[in-house]
Image 1 (cartoon, one colour):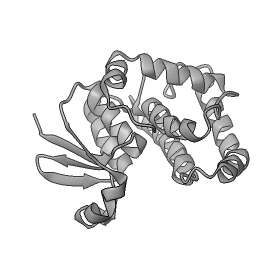
Image 2 (cartoon, one colour):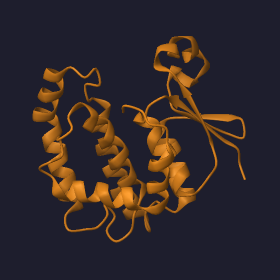
Image 3 (cartoon, one colour):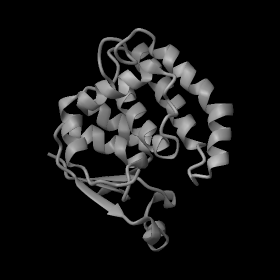
Length: 194
């Protein structure tokens, strides 16, 4: 069994999807957390000066979605066909686009402006893509469902009710949180503000 070490900040953020995927497969890993205020002294030690990174047997890999895709394949959380993977990747990239330009400074005016102008169309599109299906892929869970939850958690810290008008996305979040391995991770993970 490979040795895994995840390095990320001491909050959920982009590292949480990796934690979800490792937890889902009951894979032991070192959850190395760097305090954000200490980041400047560590930054040059990591590829492109960014986190998260996942070390596998001492080799460092970067990029959240690349790491996620690798772990999702190992966990059986990808599509059942190439076309399913295409749809799943489109959902993942849509969610990633949404969170990548979110105003993480927490400025209330900027958050409201972003959500009104850019956020609502994305949420409406995700709600429509989910439709009457249980999961984004249809009748089986994938890491796109997990990514929705880990991404929406961060936004909810700044705007708690941002998804209130999207009952299908709310129900999806609840379903993911009830997956036994995810529920166990949520219960045992360190408590952070976001």
